[in-house]
Length: 212
Image 1 (tube, one colour):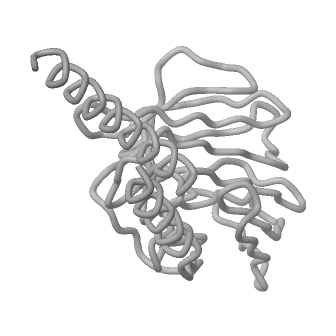
Image 2: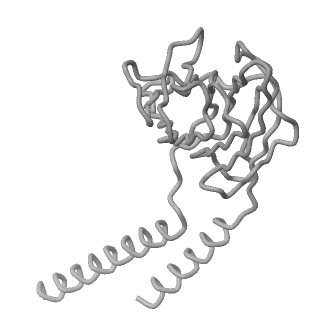
Image 3: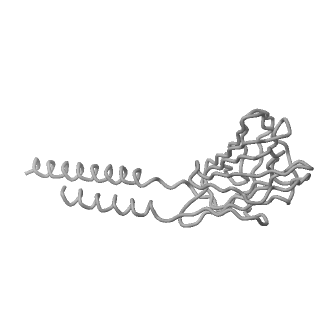
């Protein structure tokens, strides 16, 4: 039993170190990447809409804003637009973790906007230094690429626009992976497996003793 507890403690310590490895998310301007586009689920018009990623099976994507959010079909990926023509904030939650996300923002003609973006609940925050330029078609003037490195992933995005943008479109994701359990979760699993093994060994000893 002592050996089990020692090995469990070592495993927990190793997982804690692994969980604190350096990670980073970068934001750059550039062309789109990733084979998987985000499409809307038809017939929605509310503060929160759902989308699907073009994979099998397609994991859900939740988009929400404080105002009405419309989802319309586009030439490739869905267009998520504000009902009143101005979107000041937007949250995106993925049901699966991704290493890369690309998107384009449509800024109304004769206006400019700035963007602040938080990734994974504020763990990373970016204030875009250059103003988003007017892009009436929304198909290329404001393209951005998010990429995670160092063992990190992207699970949620929170945008703030000043003033508001018209829509976000051409959302694509790359290299999707299933969420990895946190170190504490791994620790509980190891302890559980260890306890189960100890009980099995104890039962075997009792059965062997009873058979004598």
